[in-house]
Amino acid sequence: MYVLTLVTLLLIYAALALSLNLITGLAGQVTLGHAAFFGIGAYTLAFLVAHGLGFWPALLAGGVAAGVTGLLLGAISLRLRDDFLAIATIAINFVVVALFLYLPFFGGAFGMSGIEAPFGDTGTLIVAVVLFGLTAVLHEVIRASDLGLALIALRESEDAAGALGVDVKRFKVTAFSLGTAVAGVAGGVYAVYVGVIHPHDFGFPLSVTLLAMVAIGGMGTFRGPIAGAIVLGGFAQAFSFIHNYQLVLYGLLLALVMRYRSQGLLGRRE
Amino acid sequence: MDPTVVGYLALEGLVVGSVYALTALGLALVYGLLRVLHVAHAGVYAVGAYCGWIAFDFGHSLTLALVAGAAGAAVVGVFLDWWFYRPLADRPPLVPLIGSIGLFLAAGDLLRIVFGPYQHSLPAMNAAPLVSVGGVTVNATQIFVLAGTIVLLLVVYWISAWTRLGLAWRSIAQDRETAAAMGINIPRHTALAFAVASAIAGIAGVMVAVYYNQLSPTMGNEPAYKTLAIVVLGGLGNVWGTVAAALLLGVVESIAGAFAGNYFPPQAVAFVALILVLLFRPQGLFGR
Image (cartoon, rainbow over all chains, first blue to last red; front, side, top):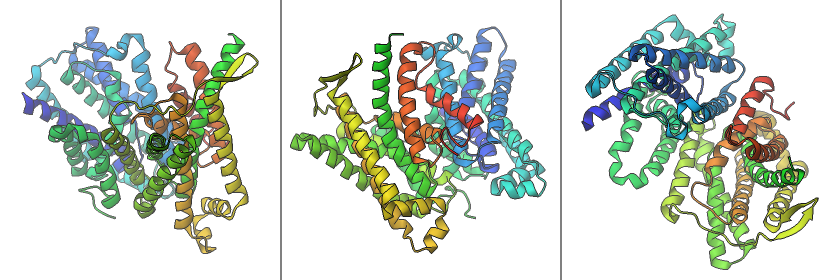
C-alpha cells in the first residue's frame, strides 16, 4: 500500500537524519558521506542474510560494521577540521561505493536482490517505527546527558572545550561511531524494505540530501532533522506531478533556505 | 608497456588535467579569499560551455565562442558572489557549502530544462593530427587545450604576481581584517576574483566542448567533486599546488584507467589519493 510504503521510508530517513544530527548537529563535525554507512549496513545485512544468517543478527552486524568504519572516520576527524573533513567524507563515500561496485560478492552494478522482508510489509513498517523510536530516544538521552553537553562544547569551540578538560578526541570518536552505527542499522531496515539494493543508492547525492535534511530542518535540534526528513523525503512524492522540475526545485530550495534562513526552518538563530 | 601507448595516455591525461587545473584554480582562488568551497563553480563551468555553444551557433567563430563563454560565466559567477556568498560571509562554513551544492544542482538541471537532456555538438575545430612527438601524434584540439591552458595560467600568474589586484588578493587571503584596515575594498576585490575565476572556468568549459565536440547538462558533475579533491591535494587555497595536482591527477587517471581499469574505477584515484594525503600530508602534496 502506498501510504504504508511512504511512511516506512520517511521513518527510515528520519532515523538517518537524527543519527547524522549526532555527528553534525551536536558535535559540529560536517560529514558529506553519511550515505556510505547507510550502505554498509544495507550491504552487510543483504550479504549475511543471503548466507543464511537471521534478520536480527544480520541487522545488528550491519550496525556494527558501519560503526567500526565510522570509528575509522572518527580517527580521521581527529586530524582534520571543517572543510578538510567534509571533503574527506566525500572521498570515503566515493571509495565505499566503488567497493560495492567492484567487490565480486556484492553483485556489481546489479547490486543485491531478493532480500526478503521477514515480517512482510506491515512488519517492516513496525521495524521502522521501532528503529525511529529507539533512535529518537538515543538522540534525546545523549542530548540531555554529559556526553551531549560535551559534544555541544566541541561544536562551539574545540580549543575552548579542550582547555576546559573535555576529552575532545574521545567524544569526537564516540559521536562518529554512534551516529554511523545507527545509520548502519537503518541501512539494514532499508535493505529489507526495498528488497534490492544498488551501489548508487548510497552515493554522494544521498549524503547531500541527508545533510540537507539536518541543515534545512535545523541543526542540533530534535524536531529539525525529523521535519527535514519529512520535507525532503516527501519532496519527490509531493512534486511527482512536476517531476521534470524536481531537481532544479530541490537545488533552489537548498540554496534559498541557506541564503535566507541559514539556521534551518525550525532552528533558532544564536 | 609500450612507451608510445604510455606517451599517448599521458598526453590525453595532460589535456584532461589542464581542464581540471583551470576549474580547480577558481575554486582555490575563491577558497583563499572567502574560505568557502564554491561547489557551484562546476555549474558556472557548464554555463560557460553553453554560452560558447550558443555564440558559436550564432557567429560560427571560435573566438566569439570563447569570449561568450568567458563573459557568460563571469556574469553568473559575480552574481553568485553578490547574491549568495557575500551575505553569508559570517555564517559557519557548512551553510554556504550546502547552498552551493544546491546552486550547482539547480544550474545543471536548469541547463537540461532549457536546452534539453541530450548532448549538443560544438564543431569549431577539426581534430586533425598536427605534429608527432617521439611517435605520439598530437592533434589540433589537444594543442588548442594545452596552449589555451598555458596562456590562461600565465595571465593568472601575471595578475597575482604583478598587479595591485593580485597583491590585494594575497593580502586578503593572508589576513582579512588587516587587509580591510589597510583600506583594501574587500567586496570589490572578491567580486573581481569571482569574475576572473568564472571567466577561466567558462573558457575551460568551451575548450572541453570543442575538444570532445560535445556538451551536455551533466558535464559539470565530474569536475564538481573532482576539483574538491584536487584543491585539497594541492593544499587548500594554494593556487599553484592546485594546478600541479590537477595535471598530475589527469595523467595518473588516464594511465591507471587504461592499465588497471578492470580492478578499480579510475574515478576513485582522486579520492584514494585524497584520503592518503589527508592522513599523511594534511597540508597537501605541495603545501608547506
